[in-house]
Image 1: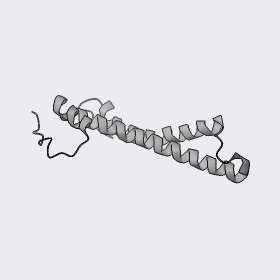
Image 2: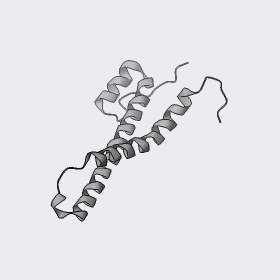
Image 3: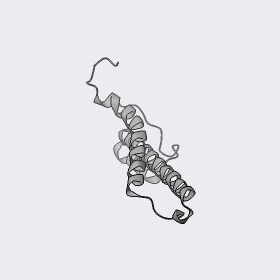
Image 4: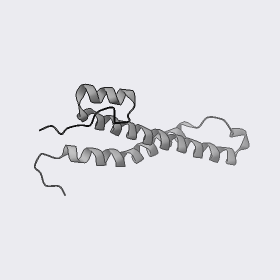
Length: 105
């Protein structure tokens, strides 16, 4: 049984999300929002780590201010972003990976 969905005129969503909702129903909106959340977390943590490494480099050697980061620093920034995102992605996909009717732990 389908649950009635409110009119898209009363829902304040960006146009691509509204079009997906109209064309395919409410099942596509949740994945779109989930992917947006994951990407936002990844970019936010990655950029924050880049700023922190840049500030640490400039404090250590003023000649490095405004210069790029080393490969190792970029690797660590990416690892921190992935690790942070895994908490959100793991919680979102955990119920989906369980067999139907299985007891939740």
